[in-house]
Image 1 (cartoon, one colour):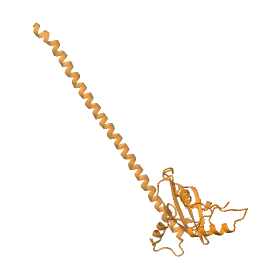
Image 2 (image 1 turned 120 degrees about the vertical axis):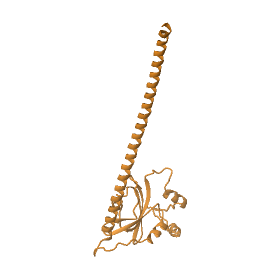
Image 3 (image 1 turned 60 degrees about the vertical axis):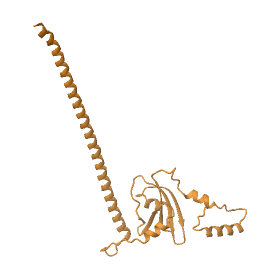
Image 4 (image 1 turned 180 degrees about the vertical axis):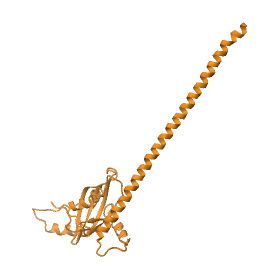
Length: 223
């Protein structure tokens, strides 16, 4: 069997009409209702793992395969599922990714040695793709013949290093706060224990003093 995905409802209806007119005994078309298709493609937020995220890669070469996509996305997370949609000139891919570490999804990733693919989160977010297309970052004083992929990798690795340092710094600060809290708690417990022991000692001294006075009283009366 063959699964066909359409970009628009008009194209879907036209294909259904043409195939039904040319239907033969050896093949048939089972159109999937729009509601069922949307339900199938829409992630279930109640049941999905919190680490799972849907992203879409744009501007892919039309002959790209799943292995190339998995390799390109390995720094983002583990690819759980890939759906590739191809046109005559290029392709796009919808990915379900398991992100073991919490990090910001980059706007682009290198595909091969000479291509950059844009990324948007969620599924088929054309509005976000168009919004990002209007944002421009300019790099000046680059060497002649510089590769945009190499420049992106350099910037991306620099950003990742800065993020790793920030995460390590936050981890150290958290550990220091835990240690300070534990030390304060121990000091408070020691102070409470000292006050309790001091109070017990005072009560014991008063009791001993009262006992001594009660023993001395008969002797004084006898004298």
